[in-house]
Amino acid sequence: MKTSLKLFILAASALFTVSAFAQEGQPWIHDPSTIMECDGKYYTFGTGGGGLISEDGWNWYPGAVRPGGGAAPDAMKIGDRYLIAYSSTGGGLGGGHAGRILTMWNKTLDPNSPDFEYTEAIEVASSEVDEDCDAIDAGLFMDPQTGRLWCTYGTYFGFIRIVELDPKTGARVEGNEAVNIAIDCEATTVTYRNGWYYLLGTHGTCCDGVNSTYNIVVGRSRSVTGPYLDNMGRDMLAGGGKMVIDAADRQFGAGHFGRYVEDDGVEKMSFHWEADLDRSGRSVLAIRPILWVNDWPVAGDLFEDGTYEISSVRRGYALELAVDFVRQQIERKSWRVDPNEPIVVHPNQKLKDVIGTWPEGPVDARIGDWMNRPHQRWTITAVLEAGGYLGGQYYKIQIEGTDRTLAATEGAEVIVVPEFTGAPEQLWRMEQLIDGSWRIMPKAVPGCDREYVLTSIADSTPTLAKWDFNNDNCKWNFKRK
Image 1 (cartoon, helix red, strand yellow):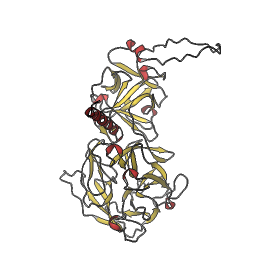
Image 2 (cartoon, rainbow, N blue to C red):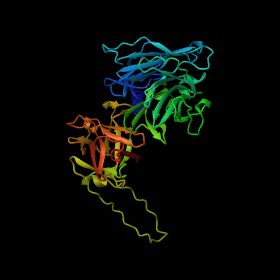
Image 3 (cartoon, rainbow, N blue to C red):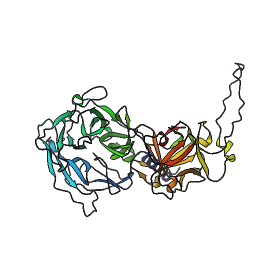
Image 4 (tube, rainbow, N blue to C red):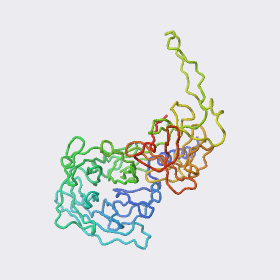
């Protein structure tokens, strides 16, 4: 093989790997803030100033603007304004532990908007050179129960603390004393769900590339000021913490958790990988689904190309091409047989055995008993040029070994068309839900500007309908084949 051709194949293989498991574009960032949506675009800020912008949530490029430099910012929308918190030095930076947490406001995150102008930064917390807490790694939290605003901060060099801020001004509430809530972690933030306050922090070693042992852990409390205990009852003030995510196969150093609630039952977590082997070992933005297992957050899975059984949570029946069932010509054996009769291994039914019986044009889709037959096996492949959505890319869903493609139609129905054209109605987003099942959604429905998801309206009938997390008709499972 010629060297140039070999290099091309290797590069193409690497591109596919990157596209399947990492954000596209130029997602270089460290300590990303919680992702914010502003006027149809997504924003995140990082250490050192600046940050990333995405129009679709999958392709990310530099362009976000944040003055002040410093480290580890966070962002939150309050009313019609955006509050940004960041730290100036701290964390042992510059040879000491003295630092400051500052906040500032902006009406928009779009640097090209005429309304784009940050207010003057104000100090809300600080630390001295020899203090037992570093004022770095700010994390913002608005308590949905009380409307009170909080900020966590601190690193491995001492305690993690929480302090109350004024949601109208972003300033520290006068007279409020910071409370110690954890040790042995950094890059903390608080979130709330089902009566529990969750403290998420980054544990392990930072800033050592592929050798960073960063991982994200969590404890929970009935009070925003703690105590935060993990699943074994260990206090985070004593070093406790339940694992949320650690390393992947080719990405290392998961840190700086941010929660993004996209829809009812659809949640994403943003963080960075300290090193991505498919991205020159650089620190990159990462996005994963959040699962809630026994009221504990756990990182979900990214969808992977492959051949699958697609089954409805409603009944467990499988999505299939609506064609006549073709019986396998294998003699039925009695259970009363000669025990010495030779064993024969029979193959599964093959595509070539049945495809000649299928209609040539568009065919309906239906749902039926799983029999591992060719009309039930779906090959799902990422369409690299189709862009994506927050944390994922679009896929085509095809009968294995054919070009027959699942598509949305006018009237919010589904059909299997003879070939893939790349049309929006043939592109699908796969999003893992907080209970571990999946939502399957077409990029567009012809003649309709509303969002619909693949839905089972009866045991045998797939269609498109409004999303309802509390309805098992809207949920699907995948089994790799």
